[in-house]
Length: 612
Ligand code: G6P
Image (cartoon, rainbow, N blue to C red; front, side, top):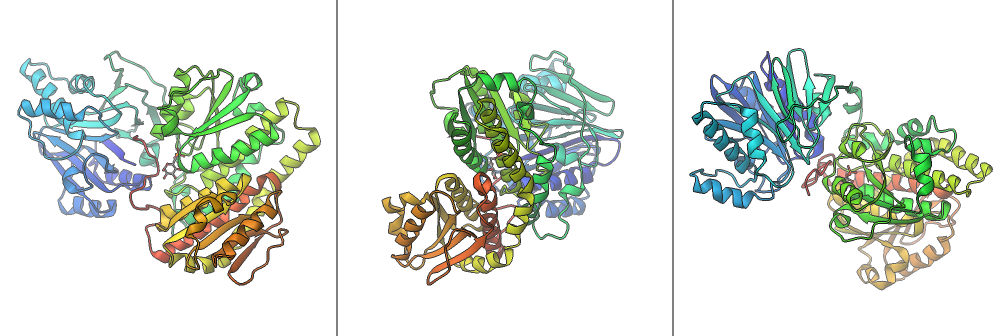
């Protein structure tokens, strides 16, 4: 989603800004732009093409300056056209970039128009630019110019979420940043000071960071950084060292990050469980041992792929730990009137830790009276990790492809560990069973490698899927969420319409869609529901549907007329979903490649959705 970079430097900042935008590209965007202060004037270049084109245009326009701001935009208010791309200017005096949504922009727009401001874009951001300009000129009239103060007073008028970076033509040594609801970090360097919506943007440029807290406003100059809270009182924040590994964001021999990340799964899962030699609540942070004993139920809240990880975990938590579990989409939960049980453990699951709906759901749960909260997340420094009582880092490493893969399987590992922990605390995990589960976890990377070895067969299937417009995915029980995730992967990157159903529901509707033109993917582990699933597959065959079945080696399903089978390793018990999702990731990936889509940056989607 939208990305911000800002800089005050002793050198020209344009290459640092464009490199920062390049590093933020993975978040998804539809336009981009950069503005600098050059020879006493605001100058900008904006583009609806890729950052690489923007960099070329910046060079062609001879843009250069010692202070500047830059942005990748994922359109919310206003179409993705050049006039709506950021930076947005006010009166040739104020330049701003903004992530988030200003909810009261319509009333502010009317007010500002009444004061003579002419709007050039359809964005909500432009009201912020004009508001700051208004405060700035009012101050100037009183002979007291303080950009930070003007920004702070403008922000007081806003409802909604924002992270912003601002500079003024008349104040050449200063960039102001502020956050409320959207992340923003300050990078401290020897040659200058910087702002970014994500530390990744400044990887390699600086190692010392300040993570701004809600309501913080930062003033960056060459001499240092001044921080105030929303009332204008000086605040101190810790400096954290973050040495970004540039290696992990390089593509290496792969064509796409998604492909690389699918193949990283054995290694990242091995890393995640390397030090797990016993099941203990300590895996979830200090104090979890005591708090987890108090809880009598679990509520998992998440979005997208992370939500499907939560759905899978429900089966584990209820079957292994016998703890009643609910799973809810964050955007629904946060606005629903629910009954809080102080003994419920609220678990938010998120790759980024910044998804606006999930973060708001976490805060909502806390204000509703839920005492115990846990974040399962892939970004140690994220807002969700700081907001929850307990934390578990999934350690998948940076995930760049918009479609989540390795973050999902590491979330599943984390949630399986949670189920085992609650089970052990409740006396339901005998030592021998614990040892068996740990052994299975440690052998999981090897099993994943044997699934990845099926890639050539999956590529052959992808040729067929690339020619279809619709596909149906079936699964049962623990593998129903895996079918959902397979359908989500296919639609998000290949744009093939795909739906997933619990196989037993087929006869209640989707069977009407089945013809010889409809590929039906079935996830067929050799578990207790296999015979039921086989009956469901017969229902498809009887209507001439084409079946594509991922069957465990021991599930006795053989290829035949209209029945295509890829043989998986032998059934892997409770951990089977982690194996079964991998061929579905590969099927989506190769279908997308065959259709020639932008696999890592699918249209209209963003990696980290930091607005509602
Ligand atoms: C976006 C991404 C998905 C992701 C979802 C939740 O929609 O494109 O891949 O699953 O957000 O993100 P989170 O970071 O909270 O897991």
